[in-house]
Length: 623
Image 1 (cartoon, one colour):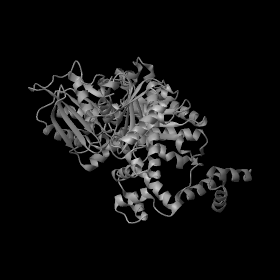
Image 2: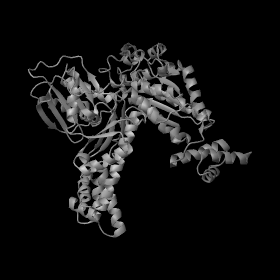
Image 3: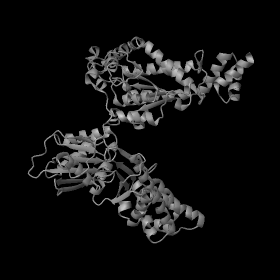
Image 4: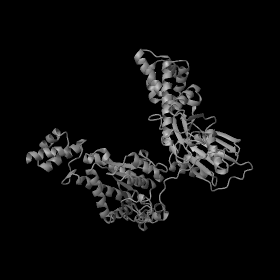
């Protein structure tokens, strides 16, 4: 749902006006308009895609817009590309609130603003935005606020029937045509002309380096040649129309639960609106598959949707007759979200031993940090019973084809991914047996992803997309114990029947969890050693990070030992993938079987360098 606030007083300007902002990968469009939609100011500025901007960059972008307005707005509606999750919308809302404090603001994505700009005739039924420009996407919303989305995943793995997709398909088609006929057809010739190339082979290096926008520009050539009757170009556009209609109808089915009811399909984007014949073709295909469809081309700039959203905040009779109905977001229960619980965490307190950290000598600093780390084993030992239970659950999961998942954000997430990545080479285990999930995904391994850890729903979706099931174990890692992403993941895992555990370093979290009224949030196990405050206040990459690594080492090493991956104290399932590990494999076999290094190497070679197999071969001979 859009992120909105309504608790402030509109501007006292003599002619109050609301501000609509729509930002995407090409440009940002801005309209300041009165309550009766008369334009006070109209501005265009550079592109803005939320995930690609730091908080500072986002703030400067909005600040530039504010500096160009003739008067402050009474309310604001913002739709920005990439603002998909609740955490994204919160971030966008906070940035706007810094630039326009005390001004009501509704922050959402550019799909919502485009849908809000739909003709009023679409307001009494579910609506599906069918967007095809440089990219493509179908996005819908019904009167109850339920949404559905199909496509819109970028030009590499999505964006079917977009200008970029049409351009890519055309490139492949003309090259296949060249291979079959030995010469370029009308479409290939026109594309060479459009790109100022002399021969088809020049398309190869260009296609490797061309940007999404450059490839999308070829769609203009495809439409031109199709209008001239070229069979290849017309076939490409017929395929594109079919795909776009298919996605639109799929979105409608998701929106209505499969019921065939009246749905308004709102057409937008240059590919559709600038090519009437293609628009008619897509419309016809939609009607064939959805007889109760009403197809409505968007007749005004979609930035007006942002204006209408802003008007809905200050008008008792909003200009947009069917304002977005908020869908309740999944939020942390009060018992966990309570900042008093966070304040009790040792990770948040100041360490009295390090209050002169900025003035002590380097040798003193080394001694101080080592002495603090020396307290960890005893603190962890206090949770031995809970850790033992977790190890037993993980071993049982492994024995029953289950998996272990670590879920965390920041340092905690990175340590989970690290431990998971070390299991396949150490124990010759399948990569999927131990998996790490980090808030923000792959990028978060080396840089911060703004707002990722605060998104409860994203944690739940990560567990859902990894297909967590009853035989699995999910361990949430959060130094303070409060990370929303982790709690969302644990709750979803519990709903799926998996064994769940929270690993944190805030003993107060155990008491908070015990008070939970909604038991769906309560993990089966909480491990919460009291490590005391960090040497550098709040820097949980220090003692908390070290303790996390110690505990994860115990969990996977002892669980793998219990399932037969270790004999004595030797890694009999190590994957000898390099010279060092092959030498270790030879020594392991020699020590376990008393074979000579030559015999051990020969057995390993015959076993395909599977250490356990070589061990069993030599053991059976010795027997």
